[in-house]
Amino acid sequence: MPIRTARTAWNGTLEQGSGQVELTSSGAATFDVSFPRRAADDAEGVTSPEELIAAAHSACFAMQFSAEIAAAGGTPEQVEVTADVTLGPDPAGGFRIPRITLKVVGYAAGLDEAGFTAAAESAKKNCPVSKALAGVGDVTLDVTFEG
Image 1 (cartoon, helix red, strand yellow):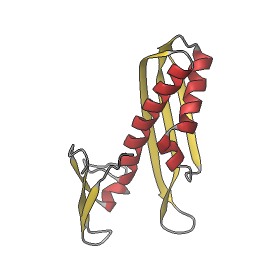
Image 2 (image 1 turned 30 degrees about the vertical axis):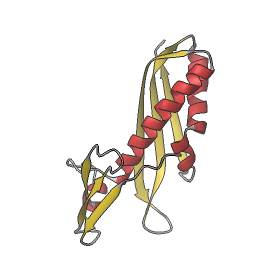
Image 3 (image 1 turned 135 degrees about the vertical axis):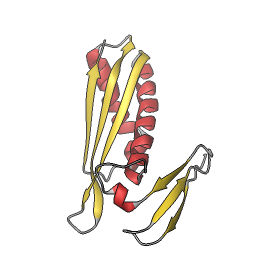
Image 4 (image 1 turned 180 degrees about the vertical axis):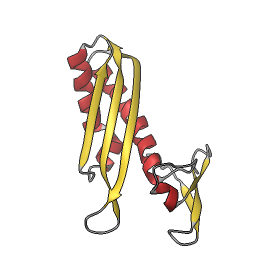
């Protein structure tokens, strides 16, 4: 099975330091990271682990959703997936990810709204990234069928 690698170089303390995350396997990009930008409402062009998790979750979900639609006898026509990953305080101290919201908008030939929604629910359950994030307390799915 494939292994994908990312590397982070960090300099300084949590509050004053900064770093860069490199998508090593693909060589696709290197992104700046900093804790103050991570904990702020405005990222100001700096990414965070939560944004990278959101990217991974939305991409994985979209792939799994496509497979679930096909298994239900449909053909994905147009689907857009957004993942919102929330960083919040951990009652035990520090921070945690208390909530992820997946939003799906689109339609698939051969499926009605009920079939489309059922495929989305199945994708939420079976997506490998969803499985990896099973420790997140609140993962919700918002489906908008445009058929």
